[in-house]
Image (tube, rainbow, N blue to C red; front, side, top):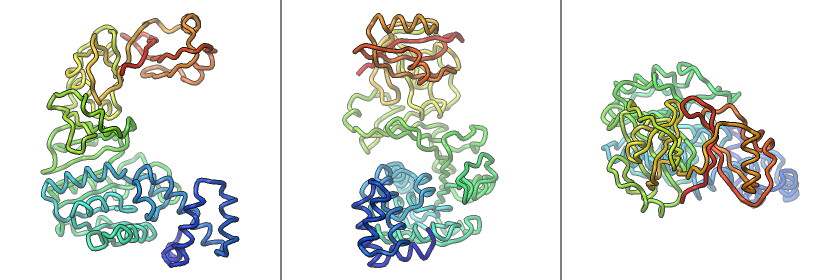
Length: 413
């Protein structure tokens, strides 16, 4: 999309085209295009409206009902923060006393809009003219234009002395190609500038890729990994006065009822949103080694990436069966939002022939396959097993004391 196409969508005719396209989104694109053209819309406007309607449909999972009025790009939607994560971040900034915030590289404005909804005055900076215009349009559509304004320019040139805090989500994909950038100094803005913000602004938050090398984490910063319904979605660095602990794993779940069964340890209490839990620690502890036991815990990816498996093991009374594999084993079950629990019924050295025979004997026709530390491809294994029967089982492909091992399990709770 270019600026002219965005402007066309914001006219009364463009709004009508978006409404019509929304009713057709999710169906056959050719049929939808034909229907819009027959209504008398110009070809370019019809195509632009359909693209936007489809993006809005996909964005509901991130932004909820607000997606219906947003202007989006494919790359911007992919990189945008989920609404629930942005809202929690904004709440923490507000609680820390941040009243004015610079969003350097604001993209479509997901984080800035959340901060504005929390009552923070946000100054967005975005290098791409179309994206900057979309962010401004999104602020207007949300009724937040007085609290969130956008300028198109170089984020490194913004005077951070004007604000109480800074949020920066450096672009990690190349403009035009969408290819991932693995060299931090090729980010936009570059990593050296981003890290330098921590010494210039006492309240600095940096959104980073979940797979960030721990060696890149600034000294004294709190590193937080966030998962939503079991998917690891982002990591953030809380710097300066915002840092509270060395490492934090935040787990968000869609079902607040599950919170009632969470372990009551103060290191991972449910927060006031009712469906988020936090596990904290140094990230340097080591879990005790031991044999496989009756129950296996598969930690949430936020816990694994934050290097907090040992802290979780302590709360569960669990041990590792292999020092390099993040599966935990315990003799009893303890409800926790930080891991899925399976009951281990069989432990055997990996052997396709033996495994196939055992599953046939038990009439297992459906399996879920989990793996850590195994080179086997789950779908190929599923085909090789040639299963038949009405029973179900969970197979865990892993290593125990370095040896390839298969665990046959069943879910708990």
